[in-house]
Image (cartoon, rainbow, N blue to C red; front, side, top):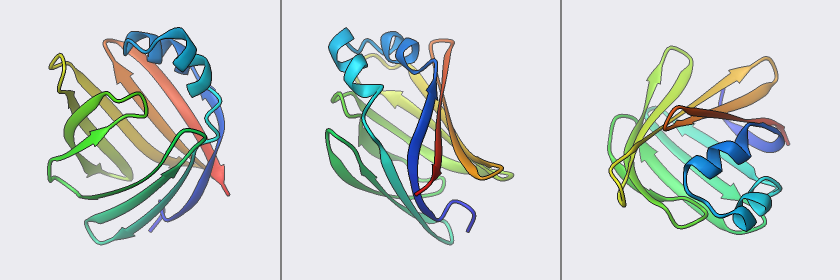
Length: 132
């Protein structure tokens, strides 16, 4: 599948503003912008396994398209939601447990890059990964 493989963070667009909108303090924002995130994605039909490895944590996430699951961001923010395929995009809709606000995320392959787009409270950010 197109998403399969290991991806290393290459650059961010508006990521600090996004983290600020999420309520992440300035110190964690500075660290988060330089987390050296590496993600490994394995797709088997509708099931995905994602391994996230960064300066701060290593975590394995398993999900099935269209099925709700719980997830904690690196700063401890807890979410519940699901991923779905829309064309060639993985589209996630997640609700924060603390305030009920919605975070959306898209993953798509653009050229040779994996582009993750996040939107929260009208603030959009992108994290762009290259195969690693």
